[in-house]
Length: 170
Image (cartoon, rainbow, N blue to C red; front, side, top):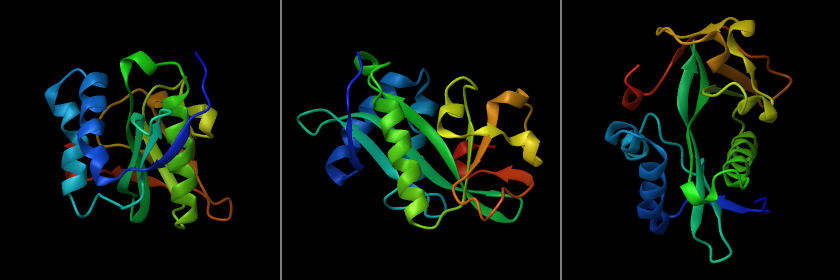
């Protein structure tokens, strides 16, 4: 079921609905608590970079979050998590939220984004293997799972190890 989704930045009223979306999308309580932990971390949270796709009644059905990380010493963003209500899976709500988040990040002058995720999903947004740019992690993950994107062609991706915000635990 394809749909043209409206997207916007989260509001305070959205927080309980976002919690429900994340809880439904992620299998463990620790994963479900990640968004709240990132929201509470002043080093990770960036206002305006938590985006929702909303239904015709302005209720969030999909969510994408960009938080602060670093590639080596260069500031970057981490796309995580992306979640969609189970009944709205494969409707484009997640893709709409991701595109809105990347657009919002670009407007604020952010240059680089990394994502640890499914290699068949993120290339549609322009992400490529991070290892091709000299970007790695301190944990062992499949090479194709860590991807990177530059939002500003005038600033190529820096090389280095990704340092995530503390709530990620890596």
